[in-house]
Image (cartoon, rainbow, N blue to C red; front, side):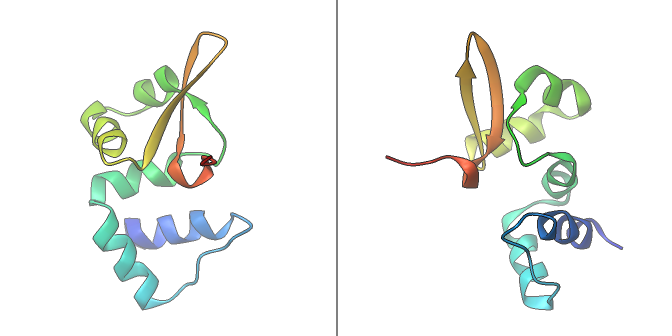
Length: 92
């Protein structure tokens, strides 16, 4: 199983699901580098403390790239910095 198939399986655990189809895997390959896909397979669907995510990965530039591209969003609550996937942020 490659990293994109692992990401598809991870996304499929979300109530929205993710089809196990070649077309969907191709979309993931267009959206994520292998390093980003690997990181994404380990991210929960809930906000996590930014320092915990950064500490869990040896390549912080991958986290920074996802933030720069808008696929991870920084948020703060009660003085703590959090990261969450963009699709879970409500827009006004």
